[in-house]
Length: 299
Ligand code: CP
Ligand code: NVA
Image 1 (cartoon, rainbow, N blue to C red):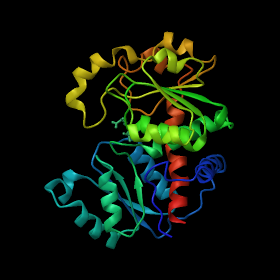
Image 2: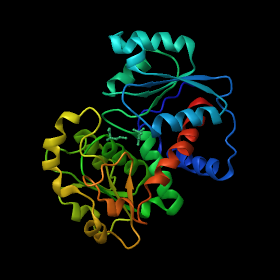
Image 3: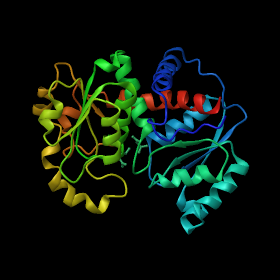
């Protein structure tokens, strides 16, 4: 059966939990198997990346496979060769694609035109591999995920959308504080509501953080929005995670960020470097979580 990994919402709740457990087992035992032996994966990255690219490259090799990086600057992608043509060509050479791009419709286009698995390495709409890794990071500390309250402070961006999907599948409660005009995807919020997920949107970061086990934020301007940076600095001024805000969370609450972080903008240096910050555990878990995802996709 051909499998893809495009959004967390696409995956049944039990499968999502099994993937997190498998990632934890791979991390603890270092027995990762060789599901990618004899396979070659193409990494198409239309946006910059440190963690995602390197953790996938390392993960592919640990699972016995090989990979090739393709960027617009060094391929015909940057010279407007249609994605549907690129997809058809690559599917004749390789065994899977790991794609970081702009609109998620591009992933759907690739899937329509090729018969090999596609993994979402970030789009404007979601960052499922990151948030699955973040759920693994919480699971290691609190295996009873439904007992958790998670706060999101800042932009209703790709990360926020994937956190909503994670709340739908892992049943923890999630409150997002986003400034007006910067809400997460409305259709997704409505779906979460319909499914009875404990997802709430508010405007006040203090309300979101109150009693939270985990406090999450992300940059104010995501990749592709650089031109809005100055305007966003004004809008998001009151959405900075600082020590005062962290004090409203539950005692022992952890600070989370997918990285890269802009210190002094969405988070203070003090919080970022504090013992409450688990950002490098999150970064490490990209490797383990993505190996479990690849094992699921390719077995
Ligand atoms: N968190 C994350 O996806 O980082 P990179 O942009 O460095 O891949
Ligand atoms: N929201 C950020 C996440 C980076 C990993 C972006 O899309 O740039």
